[in-house]
Length: 88
Image (tube, rainbow, N blue to C red; front, side, top):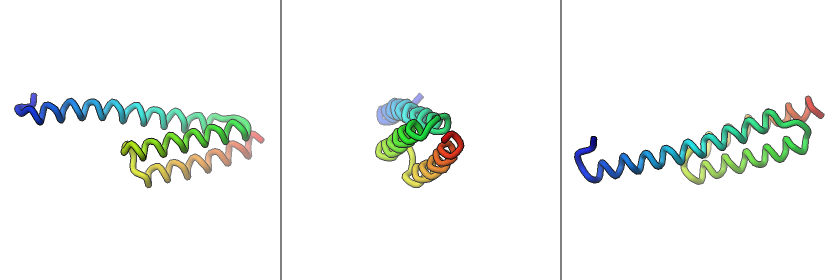
């Protein structure tokens, strides 16, 4: 247990931040799965747009770095192109 009041507050704050970060990361993973599993060009486009939005929000909240989000977007674009080509 923390010995100082400020340390105790940091433990509580870190726990809250950890919970928020888990929620945001979970939303990213779900959005990415929807892109990979989407069928048809319209649903792939909508899923890709949603995934991009979730990644941008995660960057804004400071959960992930902007370069990591850019890498994820690039990989999602490749996956969406493959999904559109195969399922079209």
